[in-house]
Image (tube, rainbow, N blue to C red; front, side, top):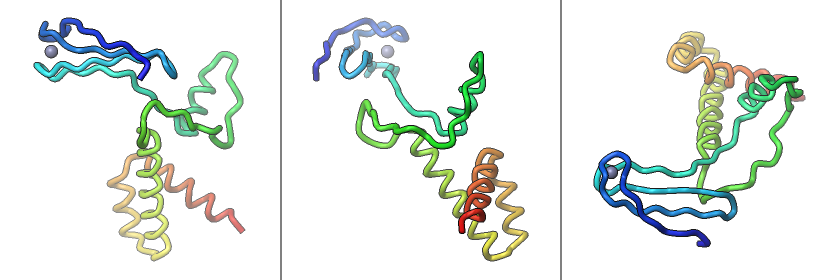
Length: 135
Ligand SMILES: [Zn+2]
């Protein structure tokens, strides 16, 4: 811990709260109010490939889409990032789709389409397509 502890009055309830700021490895700020429950923390995460390419395409001029994610190793804290958690969930959905397709149950496939989001369905169908392309 290289940071500095401090205090301030909570912007929500006005009670005194402890704060903590650090400048290593990047500037971060956090506070939590044990009176009203407000907490503020510097968050970090990584874009999934699909989202990163979307952001790259929005630049002027647009950046070329990437075919795979660069290394994403930096972490502010231990544990899974939200994008890793989301990716694990999408992989789980994709595995269910692949299983349903392998069993050739069209009704179950239709049900899966109804209960998953467009993003989940698109991810699963892309995964199945890529599996089909493998020798
Ligand atoms: Zn408060």
